[in-house]
Image 1 (cartoon, rainbow, N blue to C red):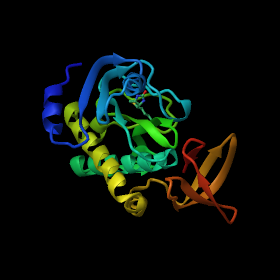
Image 2: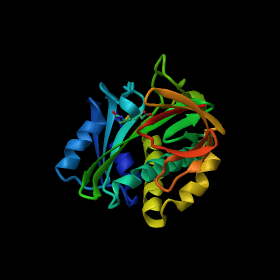
Image 3: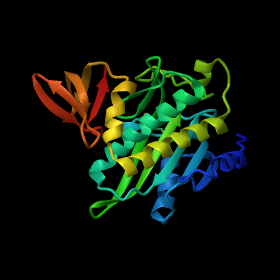
Image 4: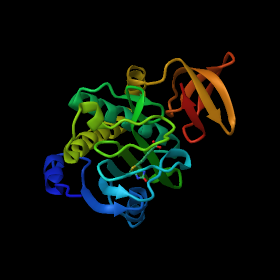
Length: 256
Ligand code: BTN
């Protein structure tokens, strides 16, 4: 795939978080390629972008189909925060990416907690967070973002998929989408580091795709619950049988 990296670098040159963009026509998973670099000491802001992935992965051990035409990339962050706050970064980034796509493409993109990007009830993209800790702190945190842009859509997906080109009625330049999403991520991440999670929690309900009543699946158990909001650690607060519970993203799948 021919991608104009020079254009991306030029447009993101003034972006505080942008450092280096490494492109592969084909990768197993950009998560793994970036992890190697993270472990070798690469700086925050390093990104790996692939034309296609042969072993793309999603949340909760699911595979992620990544054919040519989609936006598949990972970004290295090194937030000096406690690991328990990683969920805040994940939600902040999802919200700000959705916001950036809404502004640029005038599409009503929403976020299904913790970090699915939803358009017209279908899945436009998803975010995967992987991290390593050192003592009480995060050593590296990799944000993997997959966005259906011009690619053929997977069949039999849990949530029916949609692509940006389908929503807009024609092909979309990947370079432009990368720049928009990268800026969105940067805004969410740096905003969280500077102002904390309060503003994100306050904004979350406006962009949340979850209606009040949801199905929760946790460790093989399925139950009905009412969405009440987000905790200070980015967990989903629900009411179940008159009691409040906090759901951790790594433990549950939620559905309407
Ligand atoms: C999800 O919705 O489950 C998250 C999907 C994340 C997919 C992206 S594509 C780029 C990066 N590399 C991967 O293998 N996964 C993430």
